[in-house]
Length: 127
View 1: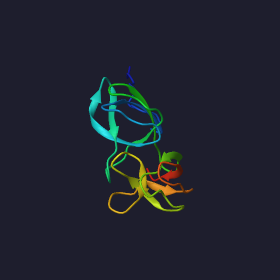
View 2: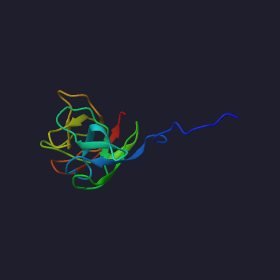
View 3: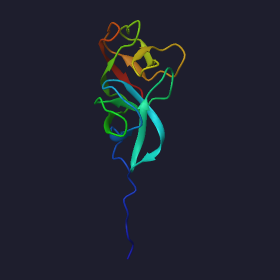
View 4: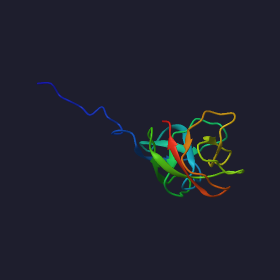
């Protein structure tokens, strides 16, 4: 008789529990930090123009579990970086995981609202 095993690591991949390799602030972008840590994907705050894995839903310290929201076309609440974000602007990560108008890195989404620096902006994610 054939034995079936589960090959799905994260069902649909929209919400993932990850392990923080440094302090992470809620509402900021995160990137994959290394290979698995304690069976979880390891994440850290995204830096300017870095590839983005998702959005932190909690403020956590090093080694703690952190819920991450991800997925194309999801609209998420993010913190705007220096200069704020205009409506309909493509956005990328700044040095602290906040979003700024995309100029150099890979755009992670499009703003569907606007916000001044340190304000909350709604972003439709690309991936």
